[in-house]
Amino acid sequence: MTMATFRRLFAAAAMFFSFAIVTHAEVSEHQPRANISFIQIDNDITLRRSVVHSLDPKGTVLFLHGFPETMYAWEEVSLALADEVHAFDWPGFGFSSRPTTDRFSYAPMDYARVLDGYIEKAHIDRSKLTIYATDIGALPALLLSLEKPDIARIVIVGDFAPFERPRYMYESLQKLKDRRSAAQAREQLHKNRADILENAFRRGPAKEVQFELSVRFRSDMARGWSYGALTTADAFASYYTHFTRDQQYFEANLDKLRTPVKVVWGRRISISGRKWG
Image (cartoon, rainbow, N blue to C red; front, side, top):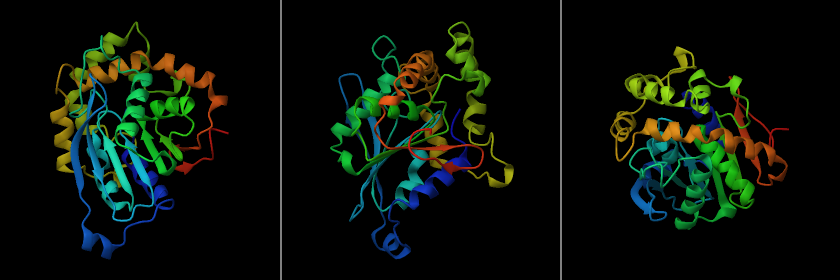
């Protein structure tokens, strides 16, 4: 489901080598803060977002969260980076819009269009942009990169299945991908709400490397689960209803990918080179 917590820590650490880090003195003096607001993408989609401004940004980072997360997944690392940092709630998550599925399918390709719209509406300089995407955010970022190779200076993705290899996915995700079992799998997500919110970050990493999430992040995920016309589980299930189609499209067009991509993958974190070579 969501990215294991220790993976995010190592991935964030890797990014520290690519971006200047705010020193302790600078943090104490300037105290960067996250500015929370809403931005309209189109008639159906308005996103809740967080923006942290740096006094002298070296670039821009855009974080894309996974399931069952919200933009608060990135709060602490956003405040630590010496760059302008953006994060938003995907449609169906947190407090962003949740149109019915006849108006918005929640497919990875739809999320790619939302991502493109956000970058445009937020007036982000693509030549200085790093996109860091995990879980459900990864395929939309890669799909957009196929369409617009200059969408970012670099795209970093992790903790997701880029190709059609269902045997390497959790059984629950395999069932969501299969239309014959998708409805039952969706219902199971609803029944397991409490367990998902409590343990999504504990599955996988050893107990000694686990840590507590902030109260604000936990509360935000819980409050946002049932906000609007459909639940976070509904949005996630709808995403996976279309996932195979969009996954296969990406794999079939992989040779057209020109945007520099780094991949965070494996039980022990490593950063690969461009693409999956």
